[in-house]
Amino acid sequence: MKNSTQKIIEKYKHDKTRLMDILIAVQSELGYISAEAVAQIAQELNMSEVDVEQTISFYHFFSMKPTGKYSIYLNNSAVANMMGRAEVATTLEKMAGIKFGQVTSDGLIGLFETSCIGMNDQEPAAIINNKIFTKLTSFRAKEIIRDIKEGKEIEEMFSASFGDGANRDESVRSVVTNNIRKIGPVLDPNYKIGEAIKKIVTMKPEEVINTIKRSSVRGRGGAGFPTGLKWEFCRNAPGEKKYIFCNADEGEPGTFKDRVILTELPRLLFEGMVVAGYAVGASEGILYIRYEYKYLEDYLEKILEGARKKNYLGRNIMGHKGFDFDIRIQFGAGAYVCGEESALIESAEGKRGEPRDRPPFPVEKGYLEMPTVVNNVETLCSVVKIILHGAEWYHSFGTSESTGTKVLSISGDCRNPGVYEVEWGFSVNDILEMVGSAGKVQAVQVGGPSGSLIGPDEFNRILGYEDLATGGSLIIFGEQRDLLVDVVLNFMDFFIEESCGSCSTCRILPNVLKQKLLKILNARGVEQDIEDIVNWGKYLKASRCGLGQTAANPILTSIKNFRHLYESKIQSRKDYDTGFDLSRAVKEACEVTGRAPNI
Ligand code: SF4
Image 1: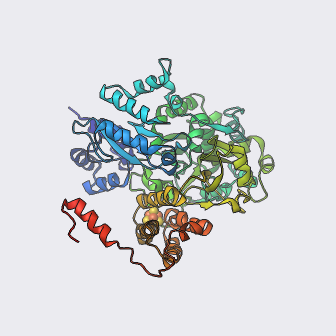
Image 2: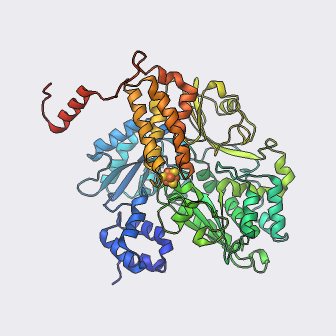
Image 3: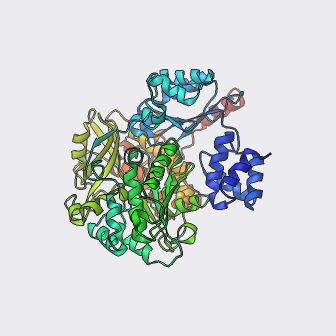
């Protein structure tokens, strides 16, 4: 009789490029990927076991050890901490009788930490068996563990919190609230689904590309590359088959706009992928979506099915002979670096998500060595509206260098966290006024940890490519926050955890900088330590991808804009200190060994 792993491998036709799907399915089925499963997968896919294991070891949500019948992944992002995560974590540990990183002896509960899960507007949040639990409190944590011990299904645990009337089919919204606070032209749901597809099939692909080029829309993931140009490069690149990827791997702490779009406007996104496919000459689209959003899978599959029925996807779309295009969903498995387009492609091919050296660029040689466009969720939604209303219409929003709008994910110390679509050209002050700050604002993190931590002196800066470009995450910190501990230290840990390890700079320097920060926080720092951080941080720019290149940003931008916080903690009368505290080291050693101090 075939075992479950065999059935999974057959479902994916023994295709090693679908290794991610195979591993995700095995992990879901068994709760971990056993050594036997690894051996079987390796044999059936004609790979070495080491190759299978190296993919497993790269991703946060894969494990070769059991993770518990109920695996609880509690988010440890800066905002989760600000909103009371510590209390929830303590209650979970106490009720489950284990520490984070452990599984109960009966295999029932596993407790794990995880970085931002895209729920910054409703923290503290956790993922339990691929379902999301938000706005956790100590009370709710107790209820959850009690329900688990009573053997309740996850869905029953939702019903418990929302009453018997909770619609289980709508679990994508029953626990996660999609806080759309301001709608602009892109998020406007009043448009006719399918109209953009009907329009483009009457145009030549080159005309579609020209319209997008004339609109000057740029990639909304943060890098801001002109979308029309990217499509043109891909269209002109030789290749038997071309691919459109939608990058829905939003892992930058503080960003959650893709989650909201995927839930509230998925048809708009899929239509954007079809438009891109037509323009580029691609026949396949792949929505690469972060594992944290696995709870959306069935919902999105249903919508794709509906689109096929309407012939928005499939063969000879909208009667246009030869225009064949379909979309499949590819989940990641927890790796921030997969938001980088070449790492995302590696991951979709079943490998470790390590960024590729470039050139060649994905538009020439991407997925399976074929020309590939990778566009952000918001970019693809924007192109539908541009096709419907025209490039000139799009130019009526934003500034001369930054046309259109930007969807922002705003969280932290504000009255109305959520998603806001604003025209480029808004200042940070405008944004603070719009979201209703909760008290005096000390700082705003613009663009997530890889962006900048700015203070009130810079709140008049303008969001746009000419000044403050952002992928859309804005986190607000009130004056009660300890910026160095609550923010900078948390973000440094994030980069250390997420480095893929390929470049020595990115593998080593963030840790070195963190040690310097800890030295300062422990009152052992001197002026030279601040200078060292500033000088050494520059070497990270030599890293291969954006993750390493920006990994020093939390500490560098905080020194630039909040140097007084560092200076208040260093020893003003000393110019040198090793940072080594002998009595503290002895005390720690005694605690570990159980021996009494002898000095
Ligand atoms: Fe990997 Fe960091 Fe190098 Fe990027 S910069 S390739 S994440 S080691």
